[in-house]
Amino acid sequence: MMLGDLLAAARRADGELAAWLAHNEPALAVRAEEAARAAGETLAGFARASFTAFERHAREEEWASMTSGLRRTDDPGLACLADIIAWRLAADETATTTTDQEARS
Image (tube, rainbow, N blue to C red; front, side):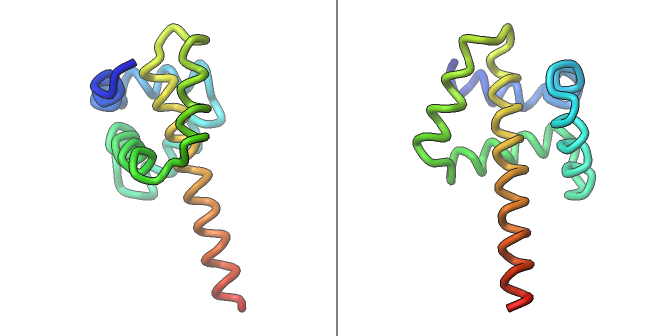
């Protein structure tokens, strides 16, 4: 899996990623669509932004975890994007929780 393959998967994300997520990760599909809509983005735009955030901020173990699953899927690019989107959603939830806790302090 090359970086270019991931970027190509992100470019085709609206159709293929949406269908792949709905079939393979239905709960993640719903969460990703809601987050994309809330951000005023398409799913493809959300996937690309997620990839950029992952590339910049993911720890080494998160990269290792994402890449270790590549051998278990028919479409590694879409599987990686799904993992990256799940990472971003978790990071966004953590940031929101932290901000809410700081506001209450």
